[in-house]
Length: 252
Image (cartoon, rainbow, N blue to C red; front, side):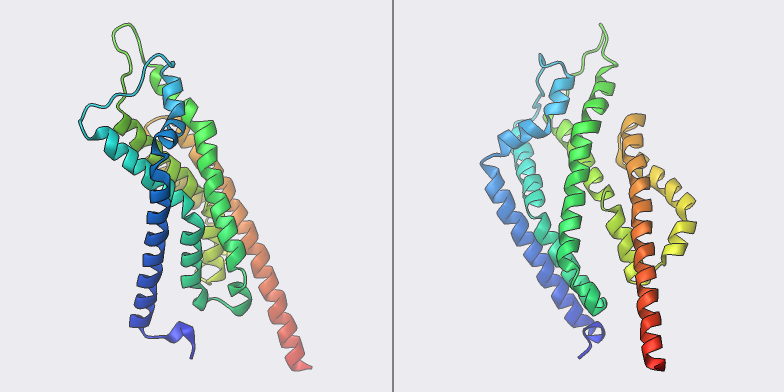
């Protein structure tokens, strides 16, 4: 039976199963990270603390703020630990709609997706966060000194951490559009100006109102988009050659 023509209820049941597996992996990762939540929190927010000059610390202004911030930190770490499982479940759910040779690429897809997310998050953490927090502390003066709360700094850091990780998935997303036949490589290339506009609009929505983080998020996304278009172009060329060879074999 063709897997792509299964009833909708079967697809929904499979989707539910894969979501449950993702949630189980996430919970296991978060539980494992809970005992190290304080260390993970210190590492994650080190750029903000360093920007404050090392003499000031983050503030907790609510009785439950420290506990719930550490809990969110464990959930974030659990999500990162579960990324291979998450991407495996996503690609496995999509796989029935792909050609047999494309289904065999699930393993590389999972590896590349995980690598790109981790690379984007690390890039944001090491290159952008210090500049961004330094930009905000640059407004301190003799009248006003920065006194940030751990909840607000964690929320901002987490948002950008995930934004950079997801943004670096751009080549995979573009390639997926190509292999599923939604958009071909030529259309993607012609749509580059619109993609550039959309990237900077998205970067402005995902980042704080500072030009540093917007530029550092937008520019890599453009290059990654073009990389995805290039890979899609090579894939289209390979498919055209296979179709031509198959047609020639039929005629022979």
